[in-house]
Image (cartoon, rainbow, N blue to C red; front, side, top):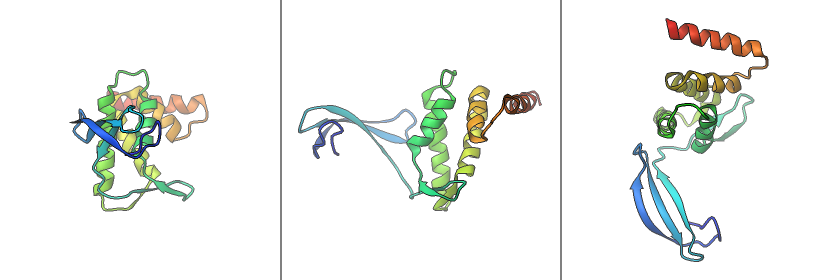
Length: 153
């Protein structure tokens, strides 16, 4: 494993343990070149996934990018990081086991919205505002109204 500080190719594993959700192995490493310590995560990857964007551009699926966008939506909300990890891990697992090598960004967005809806309504609305490209305050009002009605029903 290449050291992120000095670029040295060799490092020694000092500690290994599963993450809280059990979906990865967390490894503490020490660079044999500069002695710096850093953490790596090892996850099972069943298949390479390609995301097809709305403009038909293709890019590799990036779990960290998805986790970052979900975390931004849930920022300063009473949602634990482990809940977001589980949501993203579940989505990734569903996509990898679907049998498809390509998945649309729209499908991923809908899966995230379904997951956030059950976690936190504010995070759900925040994610929807970016995903559905709200352009006016009225868009927020209408969407929030539909979320509120669904919560009562």
